[in-house]
Length: 184
Image 1 (cartoon, rainbow, N blue to C red):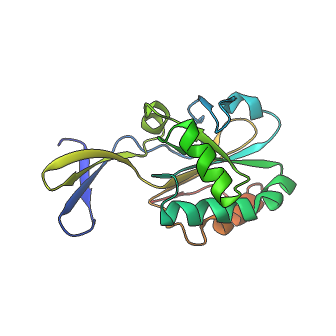
Image 2 (cartoon, helix red, strand yellow):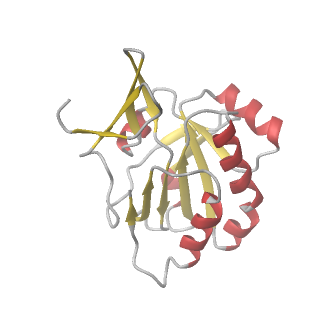
């Protein structure tokens, strides 16, 4: 596979991530408009000139790592709001799945459905996993901090869910003081 790089994965799984699709700090974030758990459309442009956006991509509703991450972001929701930021979670699950996930765990972050994976592709978070000879497209847990002007200020691929929300809160606090970074 040209343009792909293999990386560590559980035994028996070969995971490849596109090398060229990574987004870069300082570029304009790809626009999107996606339905939330209540089927209301949410667009990145809705927040331009008003709020910073913490956009996180996660593999699947109601799985252990994704639940931990969503609960952590929800518990810090007021802290993000005080920094004029909104947290949006994106997966390829449908709106009904998002609603059930939100309600089951009392989540306050907005969950957006990218059922066709178009936004995931634009943000470079999809990768191909081979399990027992079968290929499956999966989301690589990733987070993007987008400033009020729509510019990517922080780009983090390959996120570990534990403590990630607190890390993003700290990054957001330093948004105006520090240079932005890309972490792989």
